[in-house]
Length: 283
Length: 350
Ligand SMILES: Nc1ncnc2c1ncn2[C@@H]1O[C@H](COP(=O)(O)OP(=O)(O)O)[C@@H](O)[C@H]1O
Ligand SMILES: [Mg+2]
Image (cartoon, rainbow over all chains, first blue to last red; front, side, top):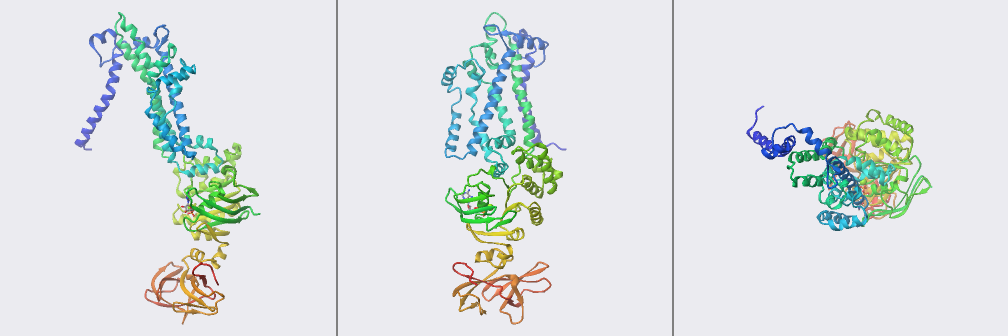
């Protein structure tokens, strides 16, 4: 097969793109396997060092925080619970609200949809004080519920589900009705399986969104047992760094690499499902 | 009261379209009723009101002795076959058939039994594990039928179920639907715009035009005795020929011929209708047809030609005759096989 010049150019561009994506991660990983001292003196590394198990062990199990009680492992668990809760509820709630908007033809459906849609303009960061006030009045600070609940509505996901449901032919609903399906069973037996690829995609986006929340958990939590990974990145290694000790750069890289694992796992796991759904056109 | 009773049923859509006007109709148990009419005449609307998919604006519908106006479609125990089949794309054939049974809380073994029986009846047993997307048009059609049959509903509703099939398959499925219905014996309503389909399937036939039932009867009654110009033109293929004429003192005078002793007291402008198959060639016939086009169907020929100023007049001749363009045929009308309609109202007058 002859390779055309254009193909070579295209491949070079693609390879550059891949390197841009992968290199920072590789450098972080390689650097995380060296001693703190050598990073400080010789800078970041492209090659692997011999401190892998020490650094990672240290990071996972060291007790940090003011009370010296919270470990990174605990923070991973917290973040995972928070992201899982946010993603699950976001997907469930937006799928159901889109269902109501598309299938219950009441006059206000369109205005309500646009009302939901414009909440895109008021992300959590903008309404953080009223949200905090409400959550604290409800006594939900320092709880998983408090971490998750204010983030579970999603205009974006509602929009995508709505557009998808609109493409489902009316006959399907009518046929299901004649087969004895009620509103709930039509949702569970039809819309959910038909939109499973979209559910997978939305879940991925929302999981990453929940996992990378910073400001909200920072404001919400005073108890260290509810700290999340992103908060920890700032807090856990700060005080030791400001003291006389060496900056613990290598361990921070280890922490960063570890913090990437849960979202990567979610993507990898759901992507299979996602692609499977894309190949079989069912509609 | 019959099995299905429609009393003065009217449908006005929210946008003001009046799709069905004060229609009354009875269907007996086990009967195969066909609604036929041109596209947009309100056939589907009428059917969908029976199914419960459209609200009834006015009137009453009774099914099996129960007033069902306000009954939810899921509670009506009716089954419908849609034009595009509306199979459940994410379920395999087995589950497509089983879904309605599951919703009624029937136990697994009974469901399996019923699905297998229906599948055997429709010859789809080999595809039970396939998704609808992996089936041909004819197979999908069978699955849609199976989904209706398996529930053993009070009534089958078909909304133009054959119109997505190619011509050959359509004829084959038409036969099978008829056979199946006779075997299962379920009351059925079948909607179609195709008059051949209507004639071949129906026990009784309702010809609908502009939201009104123009005529109700057995196919042969309607063919032999159309009560209006619309029905006469709609039923029969090729279409009936229409000629302008005048009726005076029981004498009908058309362009260049006369018929005497007409059995009608009507006087005035009329339309004369003659079916192409009710003409015979004879010496000194009433009509002289100048042949312009011959369609040879093998079994017979469709001859199109001109009578003086009237174009595209059709005559169906036996297939063994050789007729060429340019010939002039002398034709007579079979004894009493003509229809006379009031030109302004379209009502039959003879
Ligand atoms: N949902 C609807 N809203 C408004 N008008 C409708 C609706 N459905 C059908 N119609 C109108 O009602 C008339 C009858 O339609 P339909 O019953 O579908 O006719 P058919 O099945 O005989 O072709 C048509 O004029 C059509 O435009
Ligand atoms: Mg229709």
